[in-house]
Amino acid sequence: MKQLIAEPMQTPIASKTGTFLAKVISYIVHPIFIPTYFFVYLMWQFPYGFAGITEWQLKMRLFGVFWLTAFFPSFAVFLLWRLKFSDSIFLRTQKERIVPYIITMFFYWWMYYLSRNFTDQPEVLKFFFMGIFIATVAGLILNNYFKISMHAMGVGGLAAAVVLTSFFYETANGLPISIALVITGLVCTARIVVSDHSLKEIYTGLFVGIACQLIAYMVVM
Image 1 (cartoon, rainbow, N blue to C red):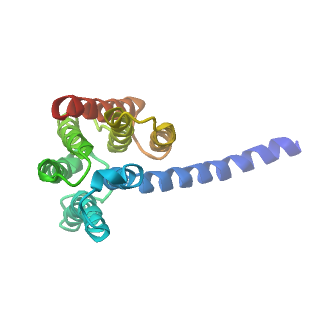
Image 2: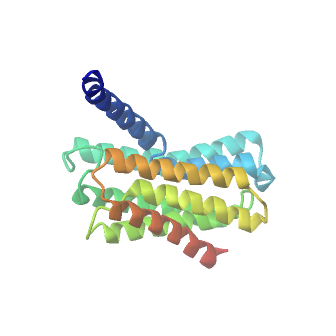
């Protein structure tokens, strides 16, 4: 009897803990931070790709990536919410995601355009920015039919970009690739736990994120 009474009391606690961790993971590895994370990865793993610029210029370049790919899209979502164009900043419906997709698409295209003219940063940024731009286009189109997971697209694209970067530089980056794959699994699992996405929406997002980076790599590089 004691065991029967104790078991149901443990379930809500475990569920709350799992949900909390899933939410934390979803916030930390939010899609808007993916470009910044990838840029930091390049700074750490391939610093020679930034030869020709000072440390201060590199920090400002990182700030620029965050400013254009994270801050402005987030601020746009905030404005849409405050102006009553969306019910929340979490973009829970397909309709609420249309304008943010378009806004993000613009900034990603601009980052790709800028990356083509920079000779003092890694060339892989060209295919990466093109890849995330294509992913937003695909996400906007598929959003008409179902609510594809943005998180899955983001981490799928990040994992693919890390692998493709290793191919481009012909470097065995076992640890970064392993970390990227673990993060991808954690984020997708977290979205299953705390979001209203179906498995189809998450798996499709993952496939789109990976496929768009592969396409961009073949076209740009």
